[in-house]
Image (cartoon, rainbow, N blue to C red; front, side, top):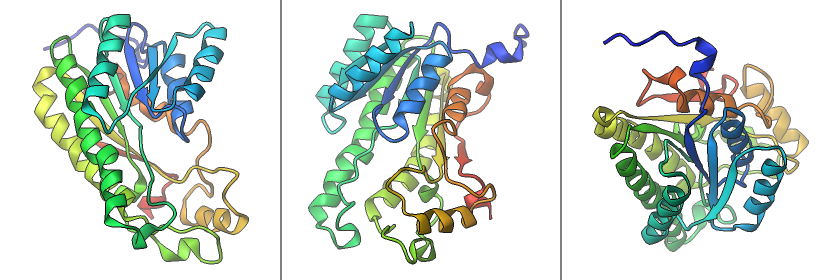
Length: 267
């Protein structure tokens, strides 16, 4: 069925949409929240710790942007349901879910860590991901549909490269992270299939490394050589892709994983 032609730049707009970004105060979260707001969405940001989100809310409102900070625990299904209820009470709907929340309990011990730590990771990164996606997509299905964007990682597509960490203080031996980021990619396809006829799209973004002040010089040099663009990601590199996948500009895209990694996984 043909639809009325829409100017292409208008297709990227999220005006009139309600978006939730989870894990919003984290490494990627701030730019994802900024992207939703800049595209015109009424935006909610949620995490376990409310304090940094309240700072973000105040900063956004000072700019005239519509951001509301909420708290929830992704390991607790009842907490997720309360989060949805809070958004529905304030906005009446949720059109966009950006699954960005992540916990990294194995960062210290990695492969040598206790099994209980792996299980703790899965409560948020696997079971919790399933819970929040099902709860919010069921709500979207009762209305006009919506879009889900899962924030994965290039490490859901490839194995850790020991040479990347040679001569550095860093390590990549975190089995939980590789496990759940790879699982997220096929979970994205599952959700796209399950909810497709309900007019709900689900896609995944697989970012590459994000440069922070914690990276040592040798690691930055090693990483740059692995990419086609010769650098790690910055504060603007991810939000455009996520806004695109959340918007009508990606209206015929679902079940896809978009690598945003400077060509790292294409080499």
